[in-house]
Length: 145
Ligand SMILES: [Mg+2]
Image (cartoon, rainbow, N blue to C red):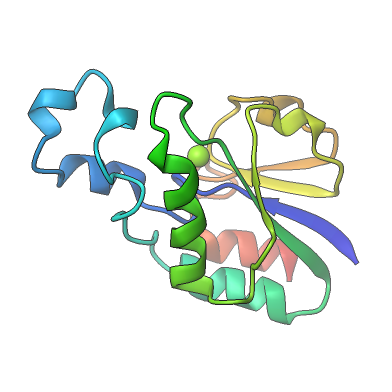
């Protein structure tokens, strides 16, 4: 089995939509990571839940979630944990890694929309979500399945 890490915001979580729809957006627009419950109430990205399910089902990958929780938003750590259970039940239980150093992750693939927090220095293959090569989940599945 290959080890596959999947980022949350901008890959399976529609963080920007949650930001834009937040009632306190104007007050927090210069520190969007600090918006109350912004991670808890975010909706999934299109096809993300189904696609991660397919990657879990295909038997080729040991799937982990690798996300960075903003240091200043203390609730975000538990909210990310709640979010994973809300959308995946037990399927990703104990498979959530919260880190600012994604370059420390040992594995084969990382799907991430940004190069930040060590993602760009990941030692395995970097699948850059949202780029021309991997614009959406369909293109990622086509490549990995
Ligand atoms: Mg991201």
